[in-house]
Image (cartoon, rainbow, N blue to C red; front, top):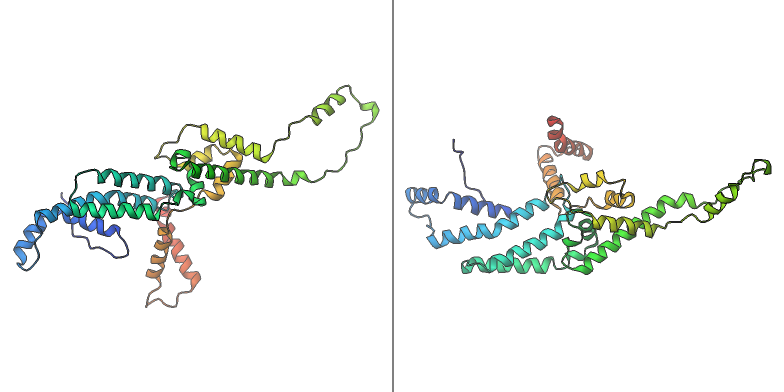
Length: 299
């Protein structure tokens, strides 16, 4: 049974709605042409060339919609996706520019490509996003175009891992109480050997331990693109004790402000003209219940 489909209106604050509007418009092309002809003669009629422009615009905007939707998620890691997806989007735009498309759509595509280059030319040098991309087992160094940015992210990860090591070893650096000398009657011929071994024990540093873990991490096989990197880090936390703690503190960065804007919109729906006396604590409780209700009902 065919489902009923309606036209979609564009919303100024959400550019994706323009893509959805054009896609539905092209999808219902025949129905729109028939309805326009039967209802009123005053409505503008699109030419076949204009219909083709709408169709080509949908093709051009489709990659932007996919990446925007991916980076707007809130139930999975998005910070590490920002740099690779920006690189992919720029590559897709350049590929489409080499194809045969009509002049109006080509001008739109050129403008979009120029905006990507202008707005995101320095994204790989963003310390937070670059660190997330480097620590993602799906991307690591190949996620960067600029090798200098990749090396900077690696250096940043080493510094943070070294800092974790020093924080963990700090209590052990305190002077210990002197031990009482053992009596000669309890001495053993192995005591001298034990003292020799104790004096020659290798003393690892935070930097050396961090370097070993980072190099081992870079030499591992790449994680599947569709897999969850958090599950991988959870499984291998014992293998990379320093890096796993860095991941726990720095890897959860979001790529956009969309999750915050969703909460802001929900709060605006709760606090309206008829519910102006809600306290801030009550609003927080309502938002919490709204965000977690679906999870509770599913379980």
